[in-house]
Each structure stands twice: as structure tokens, then as C-alpha cells.
Image 1 (tube, helix red, strand yellow):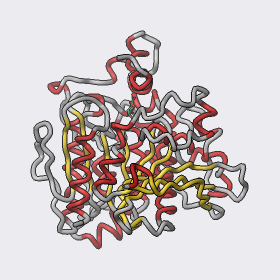
Image 2: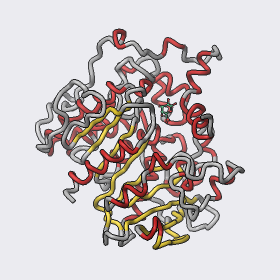
Image 3: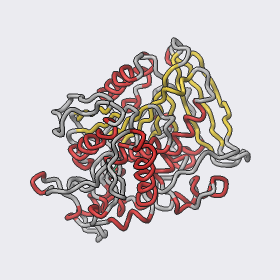
Image 4: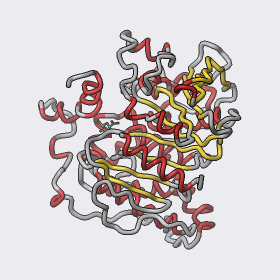
Length: 423
Ligand code: GTR
């Protein structure tokens, strides 16, 4: 069936491939990615538990005092840019509440996060559901791709002005991504959900920074637009959602799970690396620039991602086009910045572009940071078969099917959160 969902999926994901196939003469060519495991070759990863001065890290104290800040700063300098704090004038405006949402099982809240005192300034429009049966619920948070009204069939969800301004056919995406969000399942298990449209923060295009918060908040945040990039902006947005949850009595802000799919998974990882208040992290098929090892020559490459999406990373990252082996970091080190917090990394078997094996290895090589805290991660360097979640505080699964978020994925996240939060 050719519906809008499929059309979006194709335009967002396959555009790079199509341009290459049509020979549009991008800097990247078909040689820039590989789907043949026998051609992956070998690579040596930067050592996670050794400082740049050569000193070996032996315990969590040394990690937190020396190596963790060093790794964090390498990612800030070479990959994502630095992360600003919260705007001083930020405030929350309740737009509407419905305490009989989802057939009486949840309270749906719409909150506008204003980043400036001026009502005409940038706003992140949030929709949240909190289970009525739980006085203080743990909450999953994540940005959505197609507007708040796409995540559930409830027609009470506002189609926001920001979405409408870019999409005149405003109802077209209502309830189109319900599979990806599973609001009812979360609420039935005692979890809340808070989500917002990612492009409220920065439009996802090369010049999106001009109208996004990298420009509008440059002065109040004290950061120039070139000092960070879109993935960091989206990760920063999760921290602002958490700021609101901290003010919401029905939410347990100590048990908030940051989630993100694909590009938003990359952003969620960097966001959670910067904000240790986020208690648990889910990277859903985040691939290149997310959980997948960049040096592994399989699927998307540094060159391809920098060519197709130059606005996602800072300019310094472009230096590594065609030369990921020169990076002072690799993505296992990003995942290690989440330690000792619970981390769930997923892949999909048909999502070769994201390199499922590379995502597994990213998680595997991060486990030594968890060991410093006496936490068990994954049991083996070999990825499991399909639909076999494995691991303790670091968990992984490779689902059957394509690049997506499904009920199966959510069921695993809920089981993981139940276990980690010992509900
Ligand atoms: C792809 C991109 C991936 C991933 C994906 C998505 O086209 O190459 O890195 O982020 O988009 O976000 O859906």
C-alpha cells in the first residue's frame, strides 16, 4: 500500500541511495558503503579505559574523574558540538488537560515549553499521558517524526501550529505512527509517555538552523549556531522535557527513559551522555553516528552521513570523511558515557544501513565501563539471533523486519524498565 507513511519513509531514508543510483555526482559514491560482510576488513578501536596520556582506568572513580570527561569532550569537539544548559526564561504553559483520556485510563496533558519570556519566541509543544492508576509514574520520553497528533488516534490531540505551518494538509498524518508509540500499552503497564515533534526545535534540513533554536536561542544560551548541530539540539530537547517532568507531581522524574529512533536515537544518546538525570536510555536502530561502530565498514559511513545530512554534526566531523580510523573516538565510547545507567540498544534484521552487527559491537565494547561499576552488560562478543534479547544492564535485540519501531520493541523496553526500576 502506498500511503503517506511509506512515502515519508522512502523520502527520509532512501534519498541518499536514490541520488547515488541516479549518478547525481554527490561527493559520496556507491563505493562509500558496503553490504558485504566479507569486505568489512579489520579495524582497531580507540581504547575505552585508557586516558590519552596512557594511564589505564581501573575503577569508576578514575573513570568519572578523568576518562569520562575526556571522552565527553572528544565527542563535543569532533562530532556533536557542545551542549548548552537551559534557557533562564524557560517556562511551562499548560494548554489543555483531559483526565479521561484513553477510556479513563490516563490523563493527557498538553504543555508548551516556552524558551523565552516573549510569547512569540520558540516553543516545544509537548503531549504527555500519565496513567491514572499510578500516583507517580515512570515516564518514557522521545521526540516524534510526524507531529504529536500522529502518535495516537485520540482526536483530542492538538495539531500544533508549528506542524501546520509546514504541512497545510494538517490532518493527513493523524494516527499515522501509532505502531511506533504504543501509548495504550505503556499506560497499561504503569508508564507515562511524553513526546514532542522534533522539528519544533530545528527543522531537519541543511539550513534548518536559521529558523531553529540554534539561531533563536543563540544569545540566551550563549552558544553560536556552529558550536553545536541538529542531533545535539534534538538531544537537548529531551532534557527540556525532563525539566518539565520535574515539575509534574504525577511523574517520577527519577525514572525517566530517554528513547529515540534512528536520527533521534543518535540525538537521544548524546542528550543522555550530557544529562545524567535521564535514568535509562533506549537507542532504537540509531546506526551510524549512534550506536554503530564507525570504523566498521558496513552500511552507512561517516562520509555518507556527512554528505547527506551535513547539519546533523559539527563541521569538525567532516574532517573524518573517508578516514574514520583517524577519529579519536568511536561509538562504543558514546555508549560508555551512559554507564552505569541501563542502556537498551536495538537493531532490525533488514536494517543493514544501520549495521546491526556494528550496533551490537558498539554496545559490547561499552560494557567495560559498566564493569567498573560492577554492572553486567552483554554476555558475548557475538551478536544473538533474531528476536533474542540478551544482556543485563546493557541489553540488545535484533528484531525481524525493517527499520522501524514496533510493538515487539516496546514490549522489550517495558520489560527492561520493569526489571531495571524493579517495579
Ligand atoms: C537515514 C540516515 C540514517 C538514519 C535514518 C533515519 O537516511 O542515513 O543515519 O538516521 O535516516 O533517521 O530515519
